[in-house]
Length: 263
Image 1 (cartoon, rainbow, N blue to C red):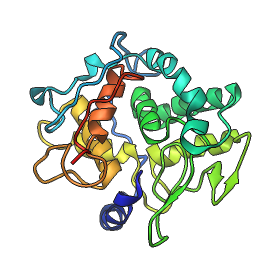
Image 2 (tube, rainbow, N blue to C red; image 1 turned 135 degrees about the vertical axis):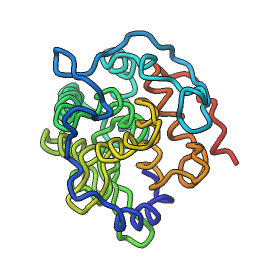
Image 3 (cartoon, one colour; image 1 turned 45 degrees about the vertical axis):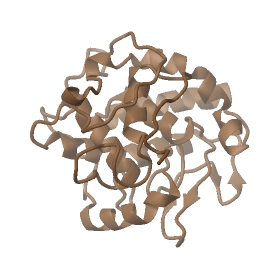
């Protein structure tokens, strides 16, 4: 979560934060029907390339539907080099150990089941925010009122292994699990998590399964969707939703061709 979006996000959350971001719908939750293994049906495939998506996140605007999303295992394996190197590359911090990477894997799976947010999306968001690094630095708003710690750079979260100059190595399991929970379930300070945002978007008329996820990603990034409905317009990172859609479709290392943030 970039500093430029923090003040706007703070004001929006104060006005509209859900009192219970962990609430699950009985049957019509956007994440769909769980498979026999307790997770959502995964689909193999995808390619490591980048397509710039514009518009409202719908199939009519060319965005990939959930049947184009690769399996969690494929995404995890494809991202293994990113995960193993991201801490040093992005934060000049010690890279994650095999144990920490396994703890991250377990945390994503656990929080996915707790919240019914698709595990593929949680992994895509972690890669988008911090390269999945458990020692990602906590960012702070210019006025010092909003902190974004952890793998998912959550809103005023309480879990971090790189906060105010204190770097934890190894990063404890409870901190890694807490980072994922803060970003997906929401925080004690009223910060939205992906779970509540996805469910809110699912209730919008004519919103498709995958589109609800893309819209929620944009809200998490900037605090709102542009009045035009175009997920590439508005504040903060204009390529954010497009990046998420590409990660879910197989993009890992190919050159990024989104130019929406070049203006």
